[in-house]
Image 1 (tube, rainbow, N blue to C red):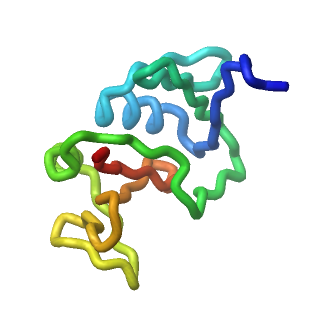
Image 2 (spheres, rainbow, N blue to C red):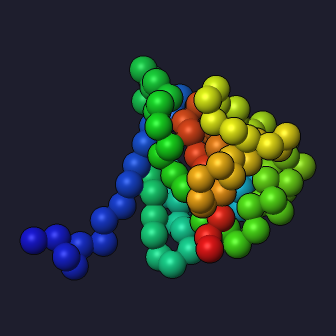
Length: 123
């Protein structure tokens, strides 16, 4: 039914300007705004929308994963950009927040609205 549909994902924020700065400047994504909605264009043609919601509550799960070839370099870059890596009780993580107990290596961080994002090392 939807085989040829160019599906996309979306999630909310409580501060569109902060989200635009974070996704565009900090993460380096191609970001545009149309009618008060951010459009994130991802490598490979994927896209995500970020929409304002006054009663926003951060997602309690990972809303966006970024596959990377070198997770250590990606995490170092995020930390250098001022991003704080998340720590989760019960998950073995190194000093930078990278979990390697189970493949693939993964590290989590949050956007300004508290939504959970991750970098995942591709094998």
